[in-house]
Length: 70
Image 1 (cartoon, rainbow, N blue to C red):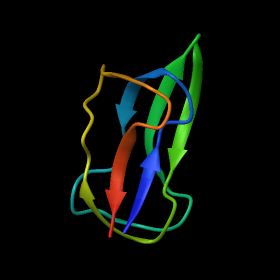
Image 2 (cartoon, rainbow, N blue to C red; image 1 turned 90 degrees about the vertical axis):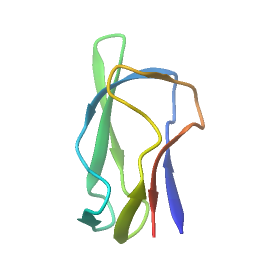
Image 3 (cartoon, rainbow, N blue to C red; image 1 turned 90 degrees about the horizontal axis):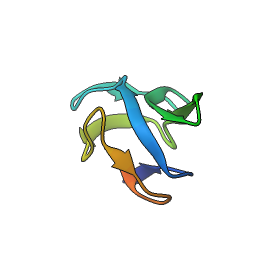
Image 4 (cartoon, helix red, strand yellow; image 1 turned 180 degrees about the vertical axis):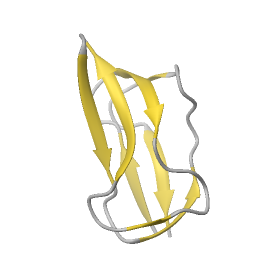
């Protein structure tokens, strides 16, 4: 199991992946936005997205889990 985490305090601008999606290493799972910059959140491993504990528009802190891959 692997977790994609926010690397910076930001707004969840767009969720690209959904629960049940098959992803490869580096696939974009979500896009964060801070100070008018878009920051893609890549998948840390290949597998199936089993959880996305955030919603679009939510503010995340550094280290918050964006998605869980199994």
